[in-house]
Length: 373
Image 1 (cartoon, rainbow, N blue to C red):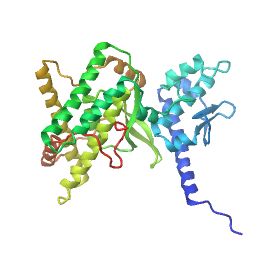
Image 2: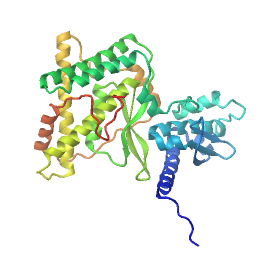
Image 3: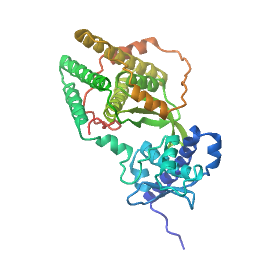
């Protein structure tokens, strides 16, 4: 008698959940990297499971030494959102196994201490919105008006009239800079969040690092390349994580995806009959990013000359710096090998980048919609 076989859809989900469980195990190991060796030795590697849950995103069981996460969370939310809930549950484990919080309430002082040491969010439970929902929905208030104004200006940048499109994009960037400068001069407290931008990968090309510097220079976010699980490879890789206000995160995320899509589109046209290899695409991409950066610098200089103000590029935000210093206590520079460049391809990319106009309304698959929601 033949045994019944599982439907293909169930088999695919089982394989995916197996990879996710392996990813949770890898992320657990990575989360312990900032702890002292003494504390790490006290923690017992837990079991990991995925369950259907109502009203909560995860749990840690002292009795089973088990961390469980919601199936809805791991299947329907971004990996940085999953990792944030995982860190919260690791903090529960740390509070019990290392700090001895058995006689405290679940979210007592020792748990909060564990969250501090693990860079975990103590609020990431119960009715807490997962990170990707928090970013996409934002918060009601004056900040929404800021984004609405930027979106309207970017919509105008779709104009077929080159002069009107350039003016609209310049106005959007001027508005972003003035808004952030005003926040800094008022010394108001702000809430910062950190999210992944792009996808975790075992290898990133030089243009990815250069693009990360561009959004940090012009869009009021701080970026760090952090360890993250690469689902399709089953290994830990790296991903760019940016920190800032929700408004600046949305804008920087959109710009990052827009520029990457722009490069892919222009490279396809540029290389249609040339047959150049992947290294030459990097040259072209670096040129596009450099050209766009030069364009933004020129816009700033023109505006500052009109208003007789200091440059608005790379304004230092002491509160954001304090946030990132805590979140990333140990950082190191990533150094790549200096490779030979094709100067002609690089220069062609610079010429293309100087004509790049950021606008609202991109709907191609893969482009972030965070700014447009």
